[in-house]
Image 1 (spheres, rainbow, N blue to C red):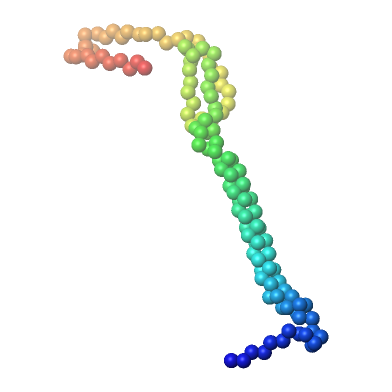
Image 2 (cartoon, helix red, strand yellow):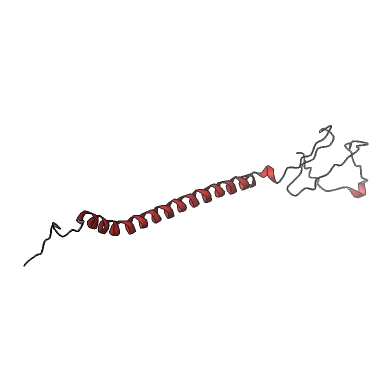
Length: 128
């Protein structure tokens, strides 16, 4: 096998410039491709960061939905809870109402005639 070698001596060619140009011609497209890939990767990382930030904001916005007090923000108040007390449930209408208690209920006893008598009486108490 024979090979031809030339040192460029006496040919007048600038071998260093030619070799540098050839290496540059092969290297420049690879560097450009790596730079483009780097820019794309940076853009994707930035987009993921923005998405993460937006999702975090969205998560914060619906956090209050987990609290029951968010939906039952209405409250009932009474100047004398011994006379009148109220409890509001979910979906209660908001507004202001005034109640005037004119007379408190009194315990009553009913007396019946012998014709209305019972054979047996069961007494139950429904006190809370």
